[in-house]
Image (tube, rainbow, N blue to C red; front, side, top):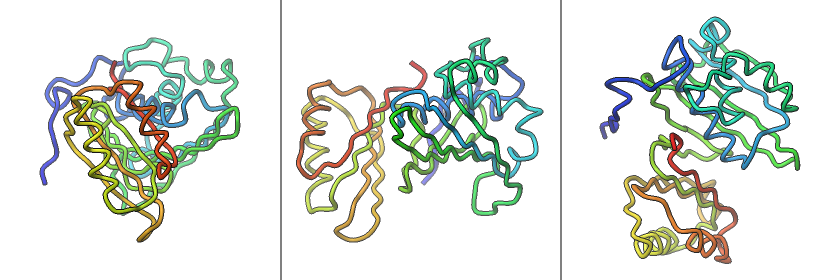
Amino acid sequence: MSERSSVFDMIGPVMIGPSSSHTAGVVRIGRVARKILKGTPKKAVITFYNSFAQTYEGHGSNRAILGGLLDYHTDDDRIKDSLQQAEKAGLEYKFRSVGNANTLHPNTVRLELTAPDDTQAVVIGESRGGGVIRIREVNGFDCNFTASSHTLIVYANDQKGSIAFISDVLSHDDCNIATMTVSRKGKNDLACLVFEMDSGIKPITLEYIKELNWVKNVLYIPDIDQ
């Protein structure tokens, strides 16, 4: 299946430079990760892979990822000083690099995040050029979404009819599903359902899904560029 294109593929985002893949895309990965954690982390272990591992300091990817975790947009001047801004915000961070991970995209970053209440999240993202990203994995589940659409992540018991049920709920909220990804730990084990939608969902619909007795956790990520 061919990947979807966006306006970023043609003109790139408005951004703090020098590189759309090494800065703008990285900022967007950080912003997605903080939404998954539901706030600014108190601790972050950030691992850059492959080409990122060689260039993350020189190309500003270290500043970009911290800027994203602080919820800065790609054109925010504060990205230039985000190492200092992170310290002011009480964010303890550590950078690591792995130069030869053959199974990963050349521009891959892994974030191990801890919230002030000790909630944790692990996010693996790819910066694919022109500011385009793909979130490859969230908390051990394959997710494969771009965050350029409204994204709903549902962790639920792997039971018959669950996908159809949530799809039906979303259709009644006038949400058009653009893509869907399903992964699970094993048969009849915990499953992760990822829906990318053309429009957002109503708060009451989100609360309804959260209250289903076979749903364990729900994450909602609006269009990351809004």
